[in-house]
Length: 178
Image (cartoon, rainbow, N blue to C red):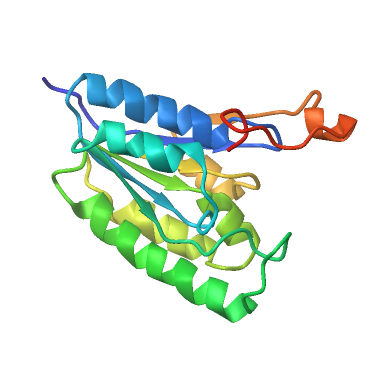
């Protein structure tokens, strides 16, 4: 099956669904026996549904959780430098995975947040894009996608929040939010 040149897709914006949209592509891809990996730059220590779901996508799609949790919120007690070190390690993993010819798709989950939060540089993202296999589809998620990343992308989707249950005092819901 010829798939042509790879695409760069960016899911950004303040609304929900950036990671979920990328996971939908992973689900679709496994239906065609395609292979890939999702590298999570920020999510880490908490349990969330996609961790368990990836077991069902094996061996075609794997999950590499390399973050140590959300930086500076809720129960984060790690020093910023530790988060930064871990994010830089995730960049190196991403560089290997975008060059791995076994991968059809690589998802870099929350990478835009990582750059916006100064855990990695925008240059790190551009370097990853620059070295990816020509046929690889690359998906970058997270709010605050940098304009230079958007300029290189083939498809950019902005999730826009119109209304959110949290603003009505409803907490994150299992199976919907995590």
